[in-house]
Length: 160
Image (cartoon, rainbow, N blue to C red):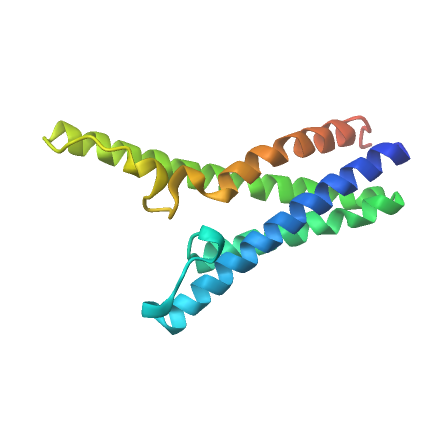
């Protein structure tokens, strides 16, 4: 498989940026979630991120997988697998959180049919914390171009 030096460096740079963002968000969510376990009454959201222990851990794992693509900077094509797995995990968790937001909206719709007043609160606060503002949803969308390019690059070479 042949990837130009310029393309591999662009991929590595994109992966470093995404991995760093995921690590920062994951660490903040994980620390806030851990703090909530130890002292539930004193837990605060860091940077207005949700207090989510397992969501933070999953973001840390995704960030670490993206940072596995650093080796691509030196031209080691084998690290494309890290980017592919990280993009897949990013999309899966982003879609999961988006489906939770959709379920909250459907719950509000059913409550409206039963006579309660319609509210848009489910978009910004719900079961998944900040709702549609959850960073994992938007980071999944940002990671789509990277995943597309990695898949396009790996499909060029046929395995025999």
